[in-house]
Amino acid sequence: MDGFFLFLNGLIWGLIIALIALGLTLIFGVMGIVNMAHGDFYMIGAVISYYIVSYLNNFWLSLIIVPLLAILLAAPLERFVLRPYEGFPSSSMIATVGISFIIQQLALAVYGGIPKKIVNPFPLDISMFGIYYPGYRMLVALISIVTLLFLWLFLYKTSFGILIRASMQDREMANAMGINVNRVLISTFAIGVVLATIGGVLAAPITQVFYLMGNDIVLLSFIVVVIGGLGSLKGTFITALALCAIEGVMASFLSPTQARVLTFLLMIVILMFKPSGIFKD
Image 1 (cartoon, rainbow, N blue to C red):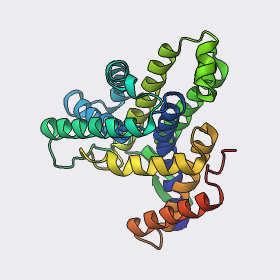
Image 2 (cartoon, rainbow, N blue to C red):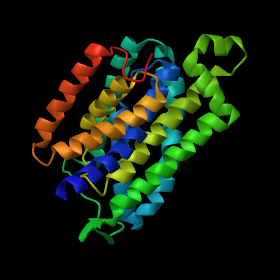
Image 3 (spheres, helix red, strand yellow):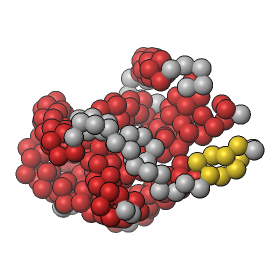
């Protein structure tokens, strides 16, 4: 029974990782940017959520406020900082490492270097198979699924979403067809940052809020994106769920470090046979 709950924990964590990794996939697919600072946007979401809970005593407000602040941050960052690096993965990697360092040092100066914890905003436990399971984790799963559903509807059922996917397929052709690529670029980066910050808000009551908490997340997100296939939204989503569920099960008989090492080995083996990722042709 413990294995089932560890699997469920992994699956729920996989939904959070799916939010973050899908943002990473969108940014790379449309903009050609390897965003090494993506985990720091996740951290920003958690830190702002901590302050909202501390001063307003309302965790749920952070699910509204944080995405709005993320848009205000993302738009000028894309337009005035990242625009020259778009389409140049190597250069963008160096540039976003610099952005990551700046964000982390600002967080250290303002927030401090001591990890903090947000009180569980939904302390109700749910009885499953005679064992009580944290209700907040189930709520995280529900919010993540709803967010992912809205993302799917936006990308596949709206005209602007079609423009984003067209730009992912062939940016030059999209530009030649008269699509306002600049608008697509700003919107795509904003969506990616919003998804990362939502992931940070949802994860904040589960994990400790720390100014370096994005480092492990961006690493795991890159593993998910690479295994799923660069630019594959479906591959990113499925890989996030599968990989985190597997890590959750492995946690029943291995340490977190050992489980992560096996995840790296799994990535190496997969890429030996499928260099472009499982879901990439």
